[in-house]
Length: 412
Image 1 (cartoon, helix red, strand yellow):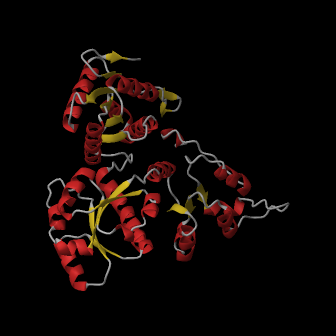
Image 2 (cartoon, helix red, strand yellow):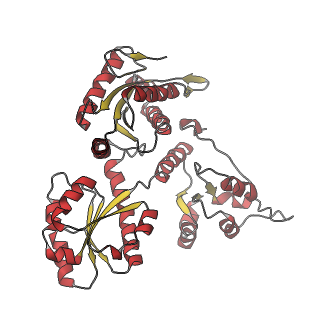
């Protein structure tokens, strides 16, 4: 009943073979939810026999290429060995019942967002590269960038903006001021971790390193061990970066995350002589939506808009919930006219979505938008101020339109 919130398509299965077939035929855009209490009603349909499905048989036959959401009773949740068995069986998440349908749908939306995580992280390594397995790290979405000169490490970090800086113990001994220089930069990324690669046991060196500002030690020199430690650090950094740089309700970049990534794109566009466009989007008459149907319904409208905008993003684009009902898009390699066509297509797609505000009562909502382009506007702040001014013009011109110049570009 609540699936229409996010345009989810729910399918239910009572036979394992059909459930497994659906998993194997999935294109990667689905979540698979298993209600453990329903196993006694699900038939295993092995051969000619049709017997009650047991948990062990279920876990054995589930394709290992996917992960699963398990629903369980509070009694089942008290059994640690059962929890361990589920977690060890490709468990994406588990939840205890009873859980309200609307809350379950909201939690599933969050899981959809989390499954899309795994953005590329950059690691700048100062020192011997033999201790790193760059291919294994690349498979975990960690790009290794080697740097040889300690005296220019701060410049490399400023240019690349890595999430991890790995400094060898020999390099640190030669210049113990390395970490202090990196940490005191007022533009230092609060999520960035600076790690010491300790190839040999030396408690005194380790103590001095931690005292001078290193976030943690990585033990070496075996590449497999170093790689495993770095992968674990990368996973934690992604979580911390999401907490700081992403909107909890939609999973999109928030203002902090957007500013950092937009600056990186502008620097890249400047180096490569490319263009980009920034757009600001605002839901029309959103206060009326909240006042008429409540803030919970307003949240649904915001999340549906986030899904609509996300479906039109291309590789390398940025999408942010900037605050409240306001969103920002950054479109790479896109001229101002091209950006208008893309953003207007998003406007029309959102306007076509029917929202059920009551039984049989469907409404449609709209948004307005403004655009600015690089290099006409050269900084992230200049781009935003120009696009925001164009958004104001779109609102003043009647809403439900995208503006990118003196004359409003209207739509229906």
